[in-house]
Length: 140
Image (cartoon, rainbow, N blue to C red; front, side, top):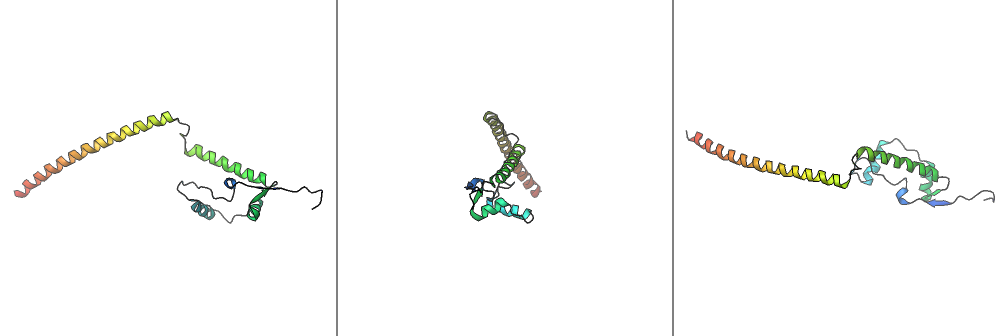
């Protein structure tokens, strides 16, 4: 190495920011191995980038590769924010609003339980009446 060339220092990338680490897919129940197979099967043959090659060699990024990796992470975070906003539209609701909704739903469930109990009673009475009526018909 000559004295005019600056040395490039390698920095270790934290495991949470590793681009080769499996990411959760759209389905919430997917395990990392499932998401890897889903993404691997849905893409054509991936071409390894310089960043991926550098990570495969020793798991570290050089100073020149950091901007490329940072851009990829920025885009991934941007997509995640968009997904959160579109799939969870009521995310900004407060706890008080949610508690009001929970109480309303619990009241609705209680009404449904009462209705089911009344229907069971009516059904039992009808079964008794029909049982008596059928017995009379058979005797005739």
